[in-house]
Length: 226
Image (cartoon, rainbow, N blue to C red; front, side, top):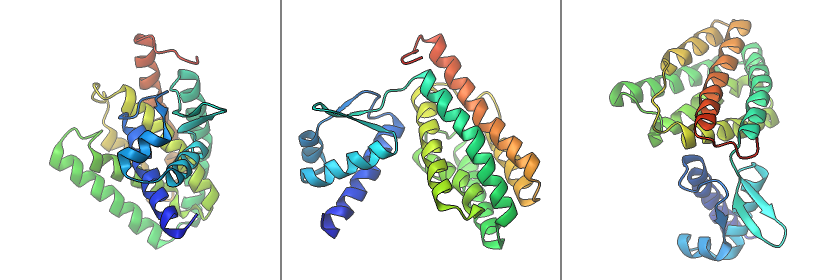
């Protein structure tokens, strides 16, 4: 594939990923190459490349002879994602606390301040696009100092998978907890180089959100794949 087509595929991958994570492309939606090509004004080659990349991230499923579809959402899958996050993210954060340099600290503080400014300006802001992007950057900023690129990539994929559930099923439910306070506590412990506290706070932070999503899915009998 040419450099130009790879660039188009990268842009399209981001657009489709955003659509899946935000819920505008719902679980199990059929993804037809011709329709996507016409919608985004691109040829089939970059569309196929984008869908294959998203298949690697677990957001799209490739089915023999049937093309592609958005991955389903189920309590069983969310449970798997949550268990993996509970192991991998604290490990990555501990490594960041051990190895992180002043640049890691400065970036983390910058991400937190950006998140705080958005929250102070807009009040309740989960699902606001700018907040979602900055929230994602903050969580990856926590583990960015671990010096393990494959681990960062894997944790980023797990975070996206988890956030997809939150955005799909909790849009009408303002959080019954102070998420900003939880973020602040995690960051403070990380900057204090208190790895045990920071890792436990991060694990509990992600598990609380997953429990809220699972409760909503059970209340509404959304038990696909459970």
